[in-house]
Image 1: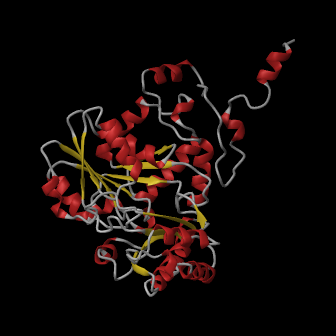
Image 2 (image 1 turned 180 degrees about the horizontal axis):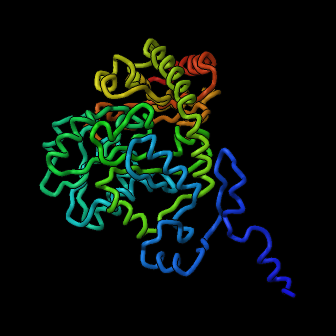
Length: 395
């Protein structure tokens, strides 16, 4: 007769997956595991020699993570995808995979702010030199190359100031010099922009945004071409990079409704952006799908749609007090970072990150347009803009 502890340990699911195969759910289950069991010694030996194709330990991820990664690979049209605990980690891990001491990295000037900090505080420490190029650049990026340039990181459009790079032109000239290209494709998602079809080598997403879509997930992904796979996969294995399994489950679930959600985000944002162009307090609206946007022709050529996030620039006579008054007057827009979720959000500030930006030192309001009724959002913005009275102006 077995002892109680032995009975407890052996009760329930004992690791035989065949017993679960009759349970065919639409969504995959979530696996909580550190130890993964092998069927026999031969599998254990193969795993020790790096020749086992299955999961060997919890740090390999799980079938849930693999299901999400395969879905992203198919949607992106790439070769291999890895999920990461956040969008920033997807970017920084990619940089670590393809750069080494003595290399030169080129980053677009509108890049996500924490990437700058990583380049300054970590890459520089390990001997990687970084410089920045204008966020609306094309083939002229060649002037920024050095003999040590190994990677170009684009973000098109930038998620604050919305400049667009001529991605096909950048990718073409980079390939001529043997330089890899990566892009943060979070704004457009794979539905509205296909990086690999335009010559890019690596496509990165903050899955936190549109792909998950519900403001309750922190997750990132990076998809690579086949020539990039070995170096990228080697880095992921060396650092034991894996993603939270609940996040992968929620992201895969969110992915199923991405197209439906994006259509509504797109329509509402474009309607509000068009309307804001006629408001007396607004100098310009930074939305690539508007004909007034400086890179509208490039957007129209390369993109299949537009997202639900954009910014607008207030006229110069409005000071920070006016910005605060506007933001605090909004009732339907939550004040908070991130975007891509169902609730409308607002942030404000001087977003341009250097003097070379055309929006340097200008106050901007950034709106994430959610899934509320557009007429209600417009009414809320109208009353908030009305709060910009003369007492908030610079004399």
